[in-house]
Length: 204
Image (cartoon, rainbow, N blue to C red; front, side):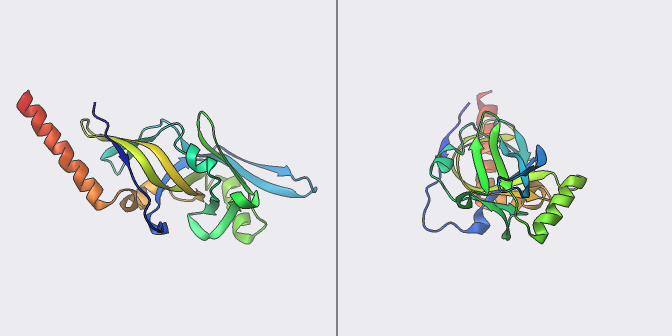
C-alpha cells in the first residue's frame, strides 16, 4: 500500500470557518459537589476515538491515529468547550480550568464543568432526557496519510491542531460535509484513484 504523508503548513491566521469537524457519542453525564459546597454539572466523554474507521460523505474512509492530539495538548493551547460549535455559547475553557482535555489509549477525553447559565441549563435537561448525546470537535489537520490504492480511499489523520470540543444536537458528518474537505482535495483524490485503477487494469 502507498501511504503518502501530507503535512499541512500553517500560514497566517486560521479562519474559524475552515475548521473541520467530527462527531462522536458522549459516554456519560454526571453531577458532583464542588469544593465550595455548591453543586455543578460536569459533562465528560470522548470528543474523538482513535483507530475507529468512519465513512465520510459515502466516498472515503477516515480514522484518527493514536497521539494525534499530543502536540496540541502539550502546547497548552487554550481550547474551548462549546454548544453546537457556537462560539457565543462557551461551556468551558482550558485557561479557566473549567475544561480538562487528555489523551488516553481510547481517544481524546474531555471533562467540562458547565456554567450556571440558561443555555447550559437547557443543555443539561436535554442530555438527561437523552435528546442530546453526541460530541464533536473542531480542528485543523497538520499531518495525514492517504491511501489512494483502495476503494473507498483511506485517510489516517496523524496530527491535528485542536480548537474546540462541542456538545452537539446534530452530527457534523451529515450537515457539514462540505467543510470536511475542500472541493479541490476531493477532485484530486478521485483523479488519483482513477489513474491508479487504470494502471492496475493495464498491468493486469
